[in-house]
Length: 335
Ligand code: NAD
Ligand code: TYD
Image 1 (tube, rainbow, N blue to C red):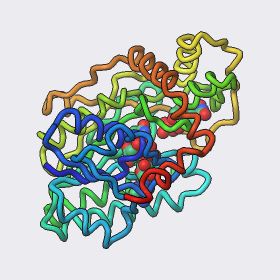
Image 2: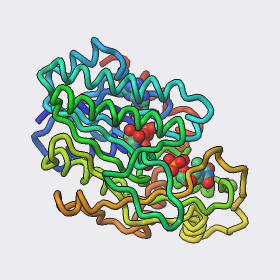
Image 3: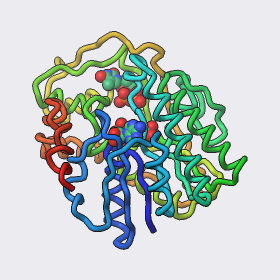
Image 4: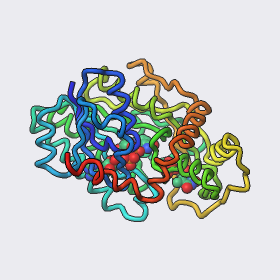
């Protein structure tokens, strides 16, 4: 099986590439990634000379390039996206370009190359947000995105479904809750707080710290995606969650405790505009139909994540200094 992974130099994509190469010795992977600020080839350093793996620097909006790559693969797994809500609030243009137009280009190319199998990675944020006592999101929750990021992801989901209904493109979609784990860019809550504490800095909690997210260890997400690609029903959507709803302040205090720091590090800052209050996911469909459920508890996953950031200090220090962006020129320029 030959997979085209888009956005494989990012957080979840790079974890997924490691997961697949480890699990399936005879699979081949092409990783198409534009290397935006979020793409980091150091995430894939250990497999860059593996004969089953090839990296292509490029944009999912590039029609000719995508067409050349799609011709030769069996499955496309689309991770590529602008993914950070705060950035989408400052400037949404790249979110519309990559998340909407880029997904459209991939779908169109998949259709024009014999209707290739297409799995689209999406988020629970397309469903909007919940009040404290609302039931969790599931596959039939109406879409109600509230940030430019989630609106762009919702648009891409609609396009993916439209290509199934209109052209019978063999698609599946997964809507997942917040991930955490190795290789997560230190602009998101958990890695930002771990690395700030390691640097002796404060951790900025937005608003009252009572916004709730459902957290899933990234390896569990990779396993869920794999089970959808292998056994998922064409045309269907699967919600993926961690069974681990927590307010931000509880996570903040847990990280502080596990790292042996003081709660004086907490700094309450101005709230995010339109800050979604709560996300929660009912993942009974994927559990009942495909036999997937999360394996890693939040406490275990958080410990593993803190350990990973402690043993990989140069990885995140290179990001904070900007040096990681030189990796491509230094290591790929004469390939
Ligand atoms: P990320 O920001 O870490 O990585 C995104 C990757 O896409 C980067 O390597 C970047 O260089 C690449 N990219 C961006 N624009 C591109 C373009 N035009 N062409 C080619 N490559 C491009 O994101 P992530 O956290 O790994 O998320 C991956 C996917 O999972 C996204 O679609 C996101 O919406 C979804 N998701 C993320 C989470 C989460 O908690 N991080 C939760 C649910 C769903
Ligand atoms: P984030 O990791 O950005 O993911 P998302 O917005 O996609 O859920 O944020 C997770 C939660 O943490 C969210 O409620 C916003 C909050 N947050 C902070 O309180 N401080 C921060 O510095 C960041 C980045 C996030």
